[in-house]
Amino acid sequence: MLNKVMLIGNVGRDPEIRHLDTGVATTTIALATSETYIDKTTGQRVTNTEWHSVVLWRQWADMAERYIRKGTQLYVEGRIRTRTWDDRDGQRRSTTEIIADTVRLLSRREDNSNAGAQPVASASPAGYSHHAAPAHHAAAPAGMPNGNSNNGMMY
Image 1 (cartoon, rainbow, N blue to C red):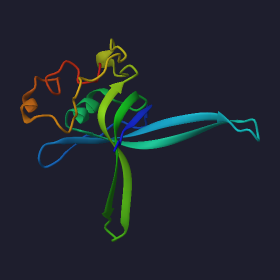
Image 2 (cartoon, helix red, strand yellow):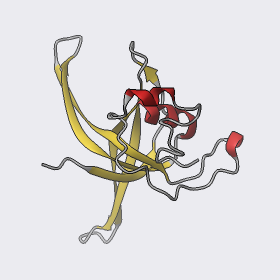
Image 3 (cartoon, one colour):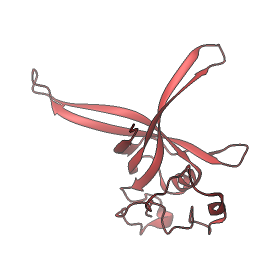
């Protein structure tokens, strides 16, 4: 079976990173994708925007905190996951999320601290998956999430 999602969209708000009790970093990004068409009955241009919750873990979350801001254009590859839980009032809730495996910045970083940033042009390392990184990658050099030169995110 195949569970694969590919999205290009704009970030709706700055990411807020969280750390679990185990120290693992995570963040959820609101990503907007849009489609535009001409309504045949009115002749009007119509734009539909879909919002996606994109979940980033470990190194991806750390990189998002440093390089992704509201308005950043991203390419995301991942898989769909639906979670269900009971809220405080006992109501059954569910959400559908995209669990990111690859993230690429498609727009320049807006932050002045890196005014010379270049747009992304290359892919992530073959076979890299944020949730399958071996434990020895935890001690990667500062600024390099798993010891690879860019981990799929160019900055």
